[in-house]
Image (cartoon, rainbow, N blue to C red):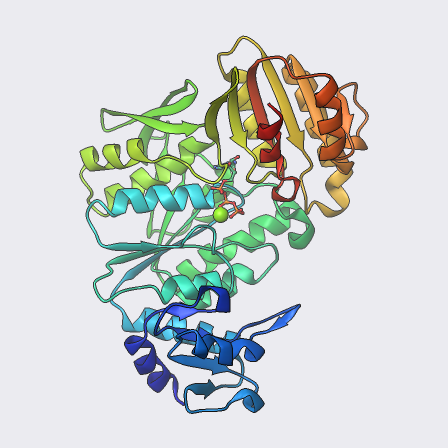
Length: 424
Ligand code: ATP
Ligand code: MG
């Protein structure tokens, strides 16, 4: 079957499923393979549950003409996504960066959807499967699609750009995340910049943070760009008004009061405002979109429970976002401040050094109480309380309950520190 024929079939069945537990009526099932499963073996079940067709790459599983056999299911999914992207009239805005991609994506979507029909990456589906699935969710009337791209090694963003072929792009920041796979901070800068490389090679448009010297430097000789800045009059100016504990800011004389905790969310908002400006969304609509946005999934949420005011940021952590969260928490106005922070993963050789640096920052900023959880933090030299595991922390807290007040909870996803909420 040619790509054109497969695409015609897709247009008749425009819902893609890759998991037999989530089959929807009349979908197309793509039999992906993982380290522990072979989707081909589930293709018949997908059809039995209501899929219209199953795309497979092992022909022995074909038992009827509702199977489409191709050479490689994943590659076919990606090629179909590119075909559909080019078939549709929607413009593609892509974004990557070390921190804040999902938040920024959602803010951009909130702003842009005030004026246009948009599609955006669902949740965090930002990899070699999620990006194609996002593109394949583009509808006939979609005008702008916002695509989050994640990466933990070189050439990944280049590859995702080759699939999505973005017209516009933004990099949130170059931070200390996935240092192991990228090969240090220089590696991160190179890897994330693959998005700039794609956009510049294709004479496409770049949005950027003009207060970030690395971004500014990378784009110095490129003209198709629009930047924001808090102080440089050559760019679109946005004022930071404060965090109390929510970020507030001002653009074009209009004050915007967000529901986002943490100064690190300021550039995320700025990117959304800048794009709103570029796409001619009226400033009042930009304001209402940003003011209405509430973060989800443990990303910088502010909660109250049993006398604790909690900044729950347990979704993930790396040295840059951890430091930003600590600094932000230290600025917060509260009587008593306690931290429970967990290990940061994927740091490779630098793990010991980075955890030590964070333990030192905790002492330097001075909190009332601090609990460090995980093997890496346990290995640091510090007078702070350390626990090898969550269970050790739990056992300790059952005998020595936390004192009420403000509480910051942050750690890598694998630490699942939202479990602390059950201990309060
Ligand atoms: P992932 O790599 O999991 O897709 P992401 O880049 O999509 O993450 P978000 O989910 O938006 O990032 O935010 C995760 C956390 O990163 C936030 O809760 C916050 O602690 C931190 N963060 C968000 N924005 C920034 C930023 N601009 N700079 C530094 N840290 C940030
Ligand atoms: Mg994300």
